[in-house]
Image (cartoon, rainbow, N blue to C red; front, side):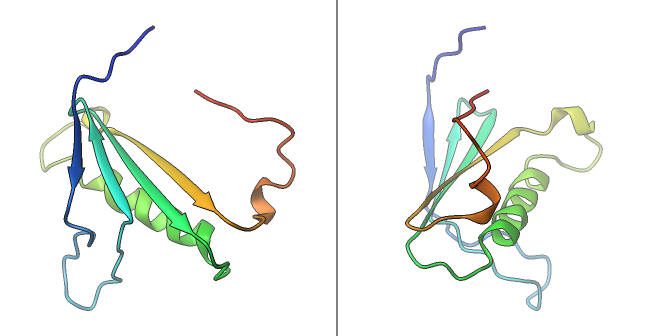
Length: 102
């Protein structure tokens, strides 16, 4: 199925929503919404702080839950894609032989 991008919207609010002030702060490098049905978080990391996988999982979950509201079916949640541009080796990806795309 071919899909065309008709609208890209950049979110200038960098902080992820927190229900309480003591909740963990998440700051996105770049959040993009495509065609009002897909959220993309683009993260750029030059220094290995040894927490990228956990941080990306946290950002993914916060973005995902932000796409669904009370009373909506879980299937109505938007697709969330994370793109990480890093300047170091990541143990998690060392075993990948070739790039995969969906």
